[in-house]
Image 1 (tube, rainbow, N blue to C red):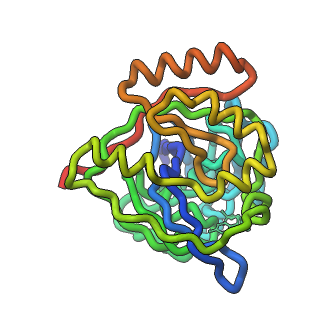
Image 2: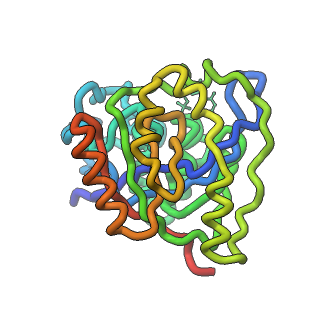
Amino acid sequence: MKASSGFAPAKINLSLHVTGQRADGYHLLDSLVVFADVGDRLTFQPDSKLGIDVSGPFSQGVPDDSRNSVWQAAQAVGWSGRIAIEKNLPNGAGIGGGSADAAAFLRYFAQGDVAIDSEIALRLGADVPVCLSELPQRMRGIGENIAAVAGLPKLHMVLVNPRVALPTPAVFKALQVRENAPMETLPVEAGEEAVFNWLSEQRNDLETPAIAVQPVICSVLAALADARINRMSGSGATCFGLYATANEAAQAAARITHDFPEWWVIATTTVASRPS
Ligand code: C5P
């Protein structure tokens, strides 16, 4: 059988509110999520045995066995074959990682008419359900309540990671306030300027605890201070800056790469909402 390819784009939380905590310890979130045009690349080749090959600039330390969320996804649906994963994105970085890869596998598996079991997706990771689509979405609950968001334009963005892995549980543990107000509705009808004003008023409730664990995030945000909006994504440590044009984003990326050659810096464009 022929090999198929898949793409696991970087997931960016433009805003992230922590609105409560469940009895099992998982946190309730209210988040606006978009996807970039950079990401991991996967290929799937059906075979009698399950196996994973990991390559790419961020392959170091990524397991190629049952600890890998893609392996767990394949096992959960009873698929076997060879999976090649090219890791182009930093891990433990707040931009999808293993969840995005597992979602790319589930998308491949569901080609044709097989519906993706949302419970399987959630069990693989709280971010897997939102990573099943590449369109802008509002994510609530612990990640299971997903709704497409209309009217969000494509955004010119710079992603910066200081190359420190930040485990999600450590950030949630450092969180002081667990019951914040939910997001207000995105004013998409009012036009692009109103969307930007709304975005600039949003926040990521995990930024303060993430900075407590990894203070270098302050320097990353400062490096993005010339952006229209600068903020951390997910549980960090990757931060994003939004720029008016692709050219401005490319210039900012070049400047930050020059000033901080050890950091991961990339200019990217996010996927817009589908026209309604
Ligand atoms: O499900 P996932 O593997 O992405 O979550 C990793 C950890 O992050 C969980 O074990 C939990 O400690 C924390 N988490 C949380 N609330 C969420 C998502 C993750 O507390 N909504």
